[in-house]
Image (cartoon, rainbow, N blue to C red; front, side, top):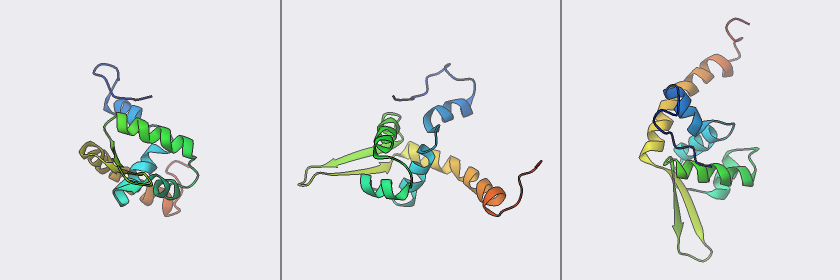
Length: 116
């Protein structure tokens, strides 16, 4: 199911963004596509450990419907399909970079969570 934000359907920008990237896997898919564009399905599956083929396929369809991911099919034998970020997807990934930096600073370095 596509999650294209509609004006007036959300209470704030974060709400609208979460409708597009919500869930456990979509941000990791975006990260994998930003690391190296033009990835094939199997490459993405290996890059995002733990994701099932069914969930990956569903999320890629949703991200494509939302204009975040571009799917390119090549008329070859065997068939080849590659995924990449659109310009909107690249901007979304750039917006997520500070969140990744926060995670590296506050979680990966082993410090306790503030208030813990």
